[in-house]
Amino acid sequence: MTHSTLNHSSHALLRSQQRGIPPSIIEWLHDFGDRRYDGRGGVIRFFSDKSRHRLEQMVGRDEIRRVSEHLRCYLVESARDGTIITIAKRYRNCRLPHH
Image (cartoon, rainbow, N blue to C red; front, side):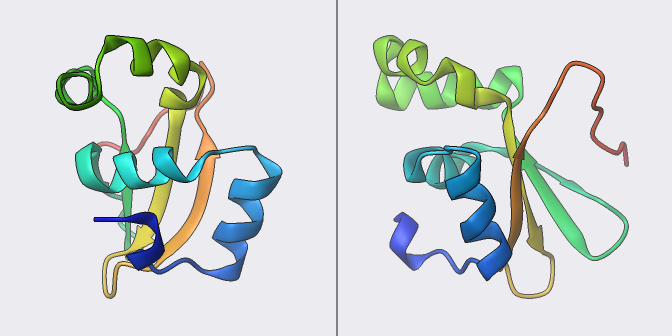
């Protein structure tokens, strides 16, 4: 799936620009990221060790090294229609909800 076919809220577009998150990371999160429901109608997509490994097999180790700072990113999308609501970077003390 390409970035142009993903539906973004204006908030998500603004946040991805403000945070310097490349479109490829958004695509990869959508295509390879693990999913976790947030319990409020959203789906969080993030890179786990397994999803990073799958991504590395597709794009190569050099590309993963080049974008490594962005592999802490996650996005939240609507469980109802898949619209990307926001995009952010995870920090050390930030945990994703467990379900």
